Image (tube, helix red, strand yellow):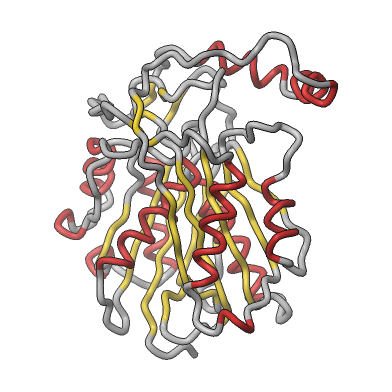
Length: 344
């Protein structure tokens, strides 16, 4: 299945970003202490029952997994240490970056959030707590909040596509907040087979309609496989990723060489370089900090990287950023942003 924005109708503009990365680091292969066998309360008993299948699945795939890599073998450089949050829960990290992103917005005093979308692959420590509901309550958004989960780095792209479509079709949707957050706790492993290691962190993006100087969303494509992948397999299909990148460039009316910054997922360096070459993107324009410093942030990866890039560049009118990512079950996504000094 593939969904895409309409670049002619697109009016969404990224107005502000923020990220939070904890200072603590741990080895991804450290065996963490399992939660107590006896639930602490009746609510915990119920929630463990609800998530019983997921918890059993996590035990089955925590070890080395088969990685499907159609164009060749992945020789990932596994991070020696990854970011680890010792104190804040997932929703607290999300709340921190949400507040910081809003504070960075122009005209923040008159800012009214119409929509809040939370992206996460990991679970809250308190399984009964809704991160999206918490942010809705704290920030006073007018729309019904919702969350996108279990899609790793794809979650942000799906949220971005939804916001862009809402702003294109609904005049009442003028401002939205997308937050990605991850905190990995037992019994879930920080290792994604031999592909990468998972870190903790959060990032947020405020999207507004015609937000003055800023990054307009030109095009977004999200593709999910029509044939389900076995849950014990980790499958990144480079061919699909390259196709989605090509479709997104075509949809935006651009050639790959017209991109000024390319931001791949920090899954591993080999994957980033292979996809860049196959998609005929200029390798010299790939923005890829060392993934060994924090690990892969899954749902928070793309907004966290985008924030760091935007803090380090001084864009000119018409310059473009291409973002892409891949899910662990064969999904692929791409988005193109263009800097506009004046919005139409």
